[in-house]
Image (cartoon, rainbow, N blue to C red):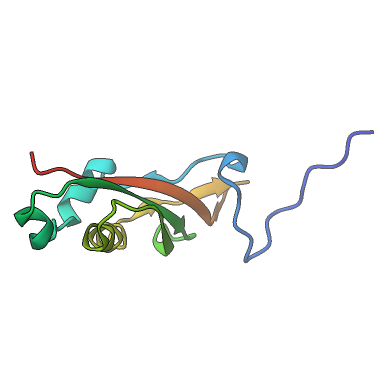
Length: 114
C-alpha cells in the first residue's frame, strides 16, 4: 500500500525548500540587493572585499522574518551590511497546495569594489 500524501502544513510549519510547488521569487531579482546594500566605509578604505551568505526565512507575505549568517565574509561590518540589505527585500512567497508557506532560502551577497 502507498501511504497517503502528507496533509497541509501546520500554521507554524516551515516547508522544506524541495517540497514546494513554487519557490519564493525575489522581487527585482538578486541585483536588487545592490539598491539596498551600503558598503561599510571602513571596509572600503582598506579595500576589503568578500562574500556573505545569509539564510533567510521568507514568511507567507514575502518578507524576511529571520536571518542567519551561514558564511561570513570574515569582517563583521560586511556581514551586518548584508543582513541590513536583505531585511529590506521582498519576495513573491513560496506556494504549496496553492497557499503561501514559510521557507528558508540562502542569499549570497558579494562585496566587490570594482
